[in-house]
Each structure stands twice: as C-alpha cells, then as structure tokens.
Image (cartoon, rainbow, N blue to C red):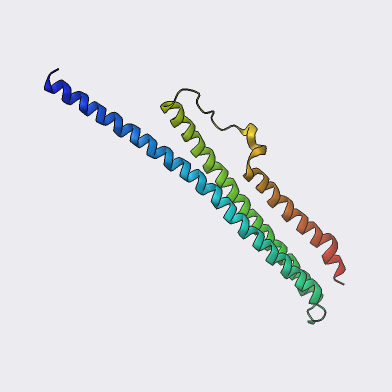
Length: 165
C-alpha cells in the first residue's frame, strides 16, 4: 500500500471516529436534557404546591377573620376573588411550563430515536407516540393542575363566598 493511500485511509478513519464521538456526545447531551426536563417539572410542581398552599391559606385567613378585623364584606369578597385570580394565573403558568416541557421532551426524544436508529440499527427505538400519553408524568401533572384549580375555585364560589354575609 502506498503512503498516500495509507494517509487517505487514516484521514477517513479519523473522520469516522470524529463522527462517532460527535454522535455519542450528542446522545449524552440529549439524555442529559431529558433528565433536566424531568427535574424541571418536579421543581415547578413543588413551587406550584407551595403557591396553592399560600393562596388557600390567605383565602382562609380572610374568611376566618374578616369580621373580627372589621373588613367590609365587599373588600373581603373581592380579596377572595383576587386570590382566585392569582390561583388561575399560577395554574395557567404551571400548565404552560408543563406543556412546553412536553414539547421539548418530544423533540429531544425524536432526535434520540433518529440518532439511535442511525447508529445502532434501523427501528432500534420507536419514535414517541401520543398513544403513551397516559403513562407520562407530565400528563397527570396537567390534569392535577386543572383539577386543583377548578376544585378550589368551585369550593370558594359555592361554599366560602356565600357564607360571607
């Protein structure tokens, strides 16, 4: 084999190695980002739960002490409804955070699937499917956000506000 041929083969081998290293690093990055998205969802869930607790606590404080503190009925009801609005905004923000997390995860998962199918073998990993939506933590988180906001609003409007006379 001539020296020129050997150099070309070595250069090609280096390029292949560089491509494989790049693909491996890209896969590590994708998996790391998916892990980050999971942690991100859990952190925001904790913040959301804290916010709900604070909002409900403030509402109960107003309900329990508005007469003793000589707060007018209109101000007390307006405060309760303002807290309900804050709750709705908090829930909407959480909903958007989770929805964008799902969208980002979906993109990373598609990229992971394409990369693995290219590197390992065709059809090694299936692309994400909407059929698995009921197994996703984020789906249940979205349901939890909607249900908690609705339940607290209904409870406030049906039971708490009418008791304030």
